[in-house]
Amino acid sequence: MTAFKSEFVRTLVERGFMHQCTDLDALDELAARQRITAYIGYDCTAPSLHVGSLVQIMMQRHLQKTGHQPIVLMGGGTTKVGDPSGKDASRQLLSDADIEANMVGIREVFSRFVDFGDGPGDAVMVNNDDWLNELAYIPFLRDMGRHFSINRMLSFDSVKLRLEREQPLSFLEFNYMILQAYDFLELNRRHDCVLQMGGSDQWGNIVNGVELGRRVDGAALFGFTTPLITLASGAKMGKTAQGAVWLNPDMLSPYDYWQFWRNTEDADVGRFLRLFTELPLDEIAKLEALRDAEINEAKKTLAEHATTLCHGPEAARAAAETARQTFEEGAVATDLPTVEVAEAELNDGIVLFDLLRRADLCQSNGEARRLIKGGGARVNDAPVGEEMAKVSMADVSAEGVVKLSAGKKRHALVRPV
RNA sequence: GGAGGGGUGCCUGAGUGGUUAAAAGGGACGGGCUGUAAACCCGUUGGCUAUGCCUACGUUGGUUCGAAUCCAACCCCCUCCA
Image 1 (cartoon, helix red, strand yellow):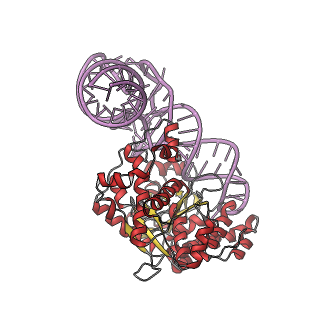
Image 2: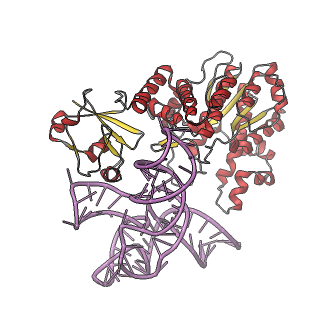
Image 3: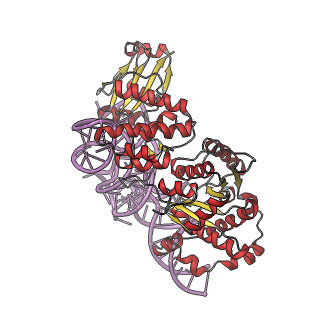
C-alpha cells in the first residue's frame, strides 16, 4: 500500500471507505498541504437519515477530525421536484414546510457526528434549493448545457442501464446529473469546495461535477466514492422488521439501534468495525480474529461504539445493560419498551393477542393470533400456544410487570397502572 | 393526434365467468439447529373476539344466479408512429 501523506486520505483508505477516486494522489497531496472543503449530498425526503447514509456521515466525521471542512448538502431543490428514479410514480411531492422540517431533523442527526459552526473547519449545512430554484433556463442551458454531451451522458450507467432494460427515463431525470454537477460548481464558487464524496452509485454524477468545474471555471476538483455496503449475505443493509434503521432516537430507539449492530453477521464484523466505529485498526484486527461464539464479544463492541457515536455513551450503556439482562440472564430488564394498561382491565384478564398488538409486537390481532398459533408468543418467557389465552394480574411479576415476547428477540413489558 | 400493450396482495408476477383471499418466487415474521450469527429445514404471510362476517385485483357504473376475469366510460403507465 502506498504511504499516504495526508491523514484524511490514509484514514479513508485504511478503513475501507474507498471505492473510486478521480485522482487519489493529487487529493492526498492537497489534503496534506491545506485544509480542504468537501461535500456530500443527501436526500431530505424523510425527517431522519438511516444507516444507509452512515458510511457517508462517518466519512464527513473523519474529514473534520483530520482537519478539514465538511459541507452537508441538502437536496431541497431536487426533493421539491420529486426524485423520479423511485418506481412509484405517485410519490407525493413535499411542501417547503415538510422539507424544512426534515432538514431540521437531519441536522439534529448530523450534529452528533460533526460540529457545525462558523469557524474554519466547522461543518456547514446548505440547501441546493438556494441556487437551483432561481436558475434561469436559457442562460443555464447556454452556460452549462453546452458542456454536456448527450453521447457521453448516454454512456453513464444510470442512464445506460435504464435504456438497456427499456425502462422509462424522463427528461427531468436525465437532467438530474446536470443539476448535481452544477451543485458542485456552485459549492466550489461559494465555499471553495474541492471534493465531492458519495456512494458508488453517484460516481457518474460526481465525475460530471468535476468536469463541469474544470471546463467552466478551470477548477481542480476531486471525486471520491465509497463501496456499496451490503451484508455478507448479499442483502441490502439497513432494513429490519420495523423498517429502516433510523439514526434519530424518535424513530428508532437506541436499544433497537444497539440490537441492530449486535445482530451483525459474523462475516461483516471487521468491515463494520472499521467503517462505523473509530476503534484503532490494530484493536479491530484482534476483535475480527475472534472465532465462533467469541465473535459475539466483537459484535457487542461494535454495537457499543456505533451506538455511542449516534446516541451518546449513556444510551449505549443502557442498551447494552438491557440486552445483557434480557438475553444473558433471562431476567426482566425494566428498560424494555413498555405499555401501560389499566389495572381494572388486567383484573378481568386481557386476551393475549390483543395485548401483543397493543405492545406493538404485532400489527394486527390476526398477526398476533398467528404468532401464538405458530408457537412464537411467550408470557414471562413461558410459551403460550392457546390462541384465546388471557393475561391477568396473576401474571404480573414481582417487579410489577408482565413480559411479553414475540420470538426470541422482540420483547415488551406490560405495566398495570 | 394515431396504433398497440398494460395497471393484481409488501415486491416481482400467474390467473381470461364459479371450489380464487387469488399460483409461483422474493421479502418479512415465527419455529427447529445455533452463538441474539450465517447456511439449511419447517410453518405463516388481508382485516375482524372468527365453523362466520367484511374488505380486496386502477376508478366508476353495467351485464350475470355468480366478475380479477365480459361490457362502457374515465384515470394512469409503457412501446411504436406523427
